[in-house]
Image (cartoon, rainbow, N blue to C red):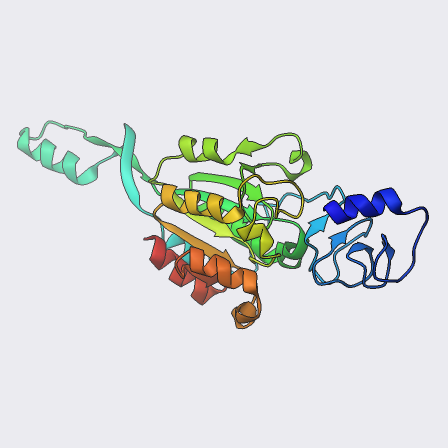
Length: 281
């Protein structure tokens, strides 16, 4: 970043190609439409090689649509395995067996017994990676989001980008202005919530290991610190990865995240989701 500042002060005009100045093409670490394994992307419409260490552009992400109808019922059925029911609240449902028993014991006088309605009492905190490389997985993640919304009454969701940091958000259109502190989220939702993180874990390793490593802002603490805090706050957790499992070994960042979540990373497949549900149960 210090070098970029120096280049900005020294550069007098536009540059095409080359390996030093801010411009287009070439192998310079600063600019657009070139290639550098650890560059700062400036003024490029979309990611191409997904290797940028920083992105010097204001990017807009779209919210996931939770009304999408699933192409298969199997995702819902897999999520349904996590449900646990209990009777809570006002007695509004007829308890037929108890009513018959009480009526018989009262000598034939009708004695109606009521019980509270059964509700799914499982609580889920869903954190969704959005934008960048996750654009490839929007449809699948929308289906998962839709299934979760339909199966869990106690569902809270927030978005993050690449790795959780000090702030999360609910609305991607307002993510620059309406953050919610991650610490506040952990204080608001108790440890009985089950934490599900959904993301491809594909990013620069600096975003996980280094202060200031975030691709979009200056983070005072590494992403690994915030991820570990979340995992301590919610003992029942899993990371669901939409990236094909066969490619996980080729990504250093996926290996780092997988190690931090103690191996509880599962592919976003029916079999992977079954394993994730078992880990949360």
